[in-house]
Image (cartoon, rainbow, N blue to C red; front, side, top):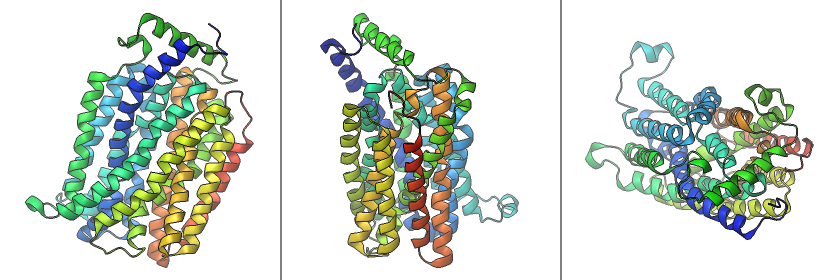
Length: 446
């Protein structure tokens, strides 16, 4: 087979694989991301009910990523050893159960344990469940990124990653008004507050999808009975050719941590995630403060659709362009610089609705553009166990930014009654992240 000029049969084979896998993984990531970030909407009501300050909420929202960081690499290594089907199913079922358990945030009396941490019972439960949610979800996203390398060569992966990751945007486009409506219209139904219904109803789909993963997902092309022998051979040949041409990367666990590019990419991803999750967890609050009535949660949700809807379109367009041109670094770095412009707008705009919405749209579009092209960079030089470890390490270190970003905004808001200083810092980090990407050595496939 001529690997430089793919045949029509190869094109058709990859289209079949994409139709089979991407929509299913897309739905899985929607429910995953919704359970991760719906706390931003719950906060609009839960903070008052449970007497959670801005700093307590910011720390609790971000502590998810501490658990995520600790268990990310082991989780991805286990996935490579036991297979994607069983491990992704385990991840989804456990995080669905824990997400639903937030219903009991105000129902558990910890007594001396909570006092030892200088917390109220509700605060301690909130912190503990957010931490456990991070532990349970660790490995899902990098596991899927690794899983895509089992099916798609690097020349096709940016678009597939972009299509998969539009779930981040769609989860917010769909989830924002649904979350708002649940809180507004199910408030006090059957004795539960709106935020309790939110966690319960949005946790159940994860459990259902976890069961479907067990039933429907294949570990790799070799296990896919829906492929013909010729189709499996075509995938195996193309992927073997792709792995042979990865430049200077290793294949075992240790080599991932010995490669300076892995550490540089982890820092760049950290810079991106600090801003992304700071805005994501605080967006409902920021939109409410642009002039929305404090009880009109549905309107907050509808307005939240705008930045995420634009971002969904932008990331697919940019991901497709990156695949057509074969260029990754400038596509990823440009997303970071656009996000930085949005951060500056938020710092300057204050509570002006038009400028605030434009700033939020630039941040979501820029960061998601970065994310969908970024993951083609490490997979261009890592394979095997090194890919499992390297992807997980980059993602876990990067997602530590998800702890510091929301926490920083909470503390600054509480001490200054403004988020402006935080957004200037976040803009600076975004520029640093983009610069790191551009300074990386250019690999043939990146």
